Length: 165
Image (cartoon, rainbow, N blue to C red):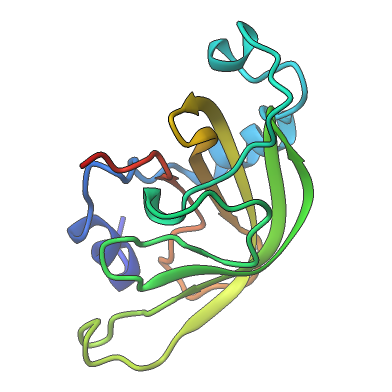
């Protein structure tokens, strides 16, 4: 299997904040199964039914955001963004949006490439946990639904967990 410039870029700029890339069939199955549906929040929320509205930290830092219009997906260098996010669900069990996944194809290099590609995508936030900053989503699943160049990752998971330090 060939690796696209974008996948190589995401892998080469990985940090403890990023989870491994996952296959599109697995991501599609998870989305269709509604893993974020009410009642499927898992142990982090099962023990406590909070009335606190959940939030997300962009790249694990800053102020908690509720229904943000955009999120940085590639936090190491901001070469991947979720934009024009329209949230259809926002609850402690999970949040779901449609929007545009935009990325720098990094051809020939990320610094030299000024072009951005984009495609329609779904964005799902999950794994809400209680923190000192309130109830925060820690996981972002991105599933590209629009047309992309051959070899571009169609599904991936990114950590939005708070950065300590």
